[in-house]
Image 1 (tube, helix red, strand yellow):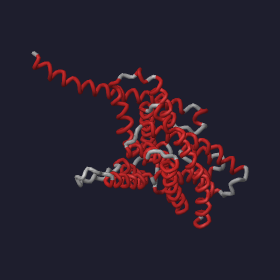
Image 2: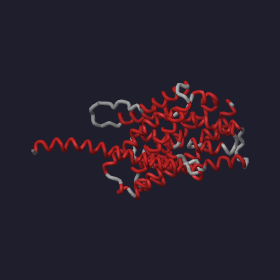
Image 3: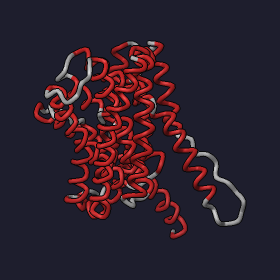
Image 4: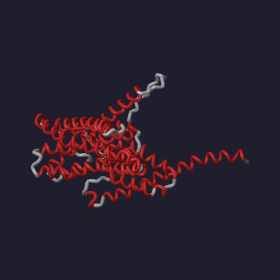
Length: 358
């Protein structure tokens, strides 16, 4: 009898683990559904706070205040949402971008986007690691969120770097603070005459330097519909740059790891290619070819936003406040340095590009 009991017990364990994982995923999905409803409230939507941002904040509150209320077996489902589901969702983010839209702003929009993304990543990583003595992952995540597309870029980099959840939370905090500030500061500075920009310049500057897509739209809508259109396209051009940047970062990390090996075996790690980034690029092409009906694209984008919200919520649940406290002030100062560069350096880039190519 004892010889028969052992296989039964060992067979039951994986089944229980699978059930626990599914329960964890369902829990995150229900949590994300509540977050989506919360983000749709007018006073929150008017602040340009996307469900992704609300998700990580709400998840962090739950993870720190009520984490004992979640069964331990659900943790694998939360981790699945924060890792594997995340990669799929970032790939489908490509359906929001088309090559035709990018072509509308032409060389000026592409030039501003490239210069802002590259310079902001360099400034943010340098300031974080050299000035603020942050670890590489926290510095890169903070710089990426500011340079490319806010919380979505943080998620993509988190997946590539395989960093700890609290580092993503700090980077998202920077996006929330300085991106929200931009929504009010940029239009105010323009109306007060502090920014001497025409409609094209406004679109290039707003779209090229504000963190989140929703924040870009919120800020530019206070200027004009034409400026909003240009700013949105420039912003999506920055989103498009996520693919080459991730591939470049992946090669850099791979080279750093190989150079740092000290085991004397002579073996080298293979390049960890972020396949979800290639999926992102493939779906940009699909969207550009208009293969899918508009209703299908809209539905997929809605589902993708929900999946990203699930990933953000799961990251929040895995985040611990005490971990954030250790590097909190230094990460915030790094975000402030990057934000100062986005304003000063971004304005200089915008005016220079518009003078030469506009």
